[in-house]
Image (cartoon, rainbow, N blue to C red; front, side, top):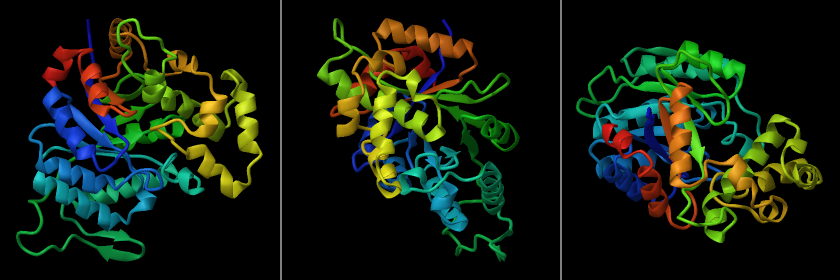
Length: 330
């Protein structure tokens, strides 16, 4: 049975380096960390701390938002990770669908993301670039910069046709949550949010809701922000009316409360627990193994599991057991 590589993603917090260390012990291929400063702690600090305590696991931003950091600051951050963990860094990058919207701003244009990535690569080859009307170059003192060029893969997080087209032209891989990116990808990663059920466990149990309720809620958030029809989701129209009733300044705050990690009071009240089974990567071990095989057949090369809830180690351990051969091969 074909299986993709198994990686993991983290809602970045103080314990994330410890969880990445465990993920390496469990055999995960790569660890991705979120870059949403209104929601999470700093991803670059987490990656550097994780680099110090691991030897093999890939380290990635999942995903960086160019508008949140100056080009030179990001280039220096990548050089820092390369100095600690040579050859292990991957740049996941996107338009800021969460990182910027959580601040009340619209996502970036893909053309601007592509320009940022091209300039980053040039800087880390040791070249001068023209940025903000000025010439810029890495000018670190002797011994304070890893050997150039610093090579790293770029994955773009895309869900629509413009993003998928940008990833084909400017990236080494693509990250998706729901979209089918089409065929022909050497590297196609798919996010998986949910939980592995214990034997006989109800999908509406308190443990499952704590570990995977956020994964159902984020689909409601996505539908609302993308302008999709909320009637397609259980209780979706009533859920949306509450959001619509807020002022513009309040809306992005309530909408993102708990986003990607826990269920907010509003989501807990309005979203049926039964949605977890239909909307998330949740099921028995056998059910999820079959879903992994289906993803592999569709061209997905890497499944990125984001654990949540009060017991992150339990979630990592349970998911790693779905395809031990694939994990070990990573």
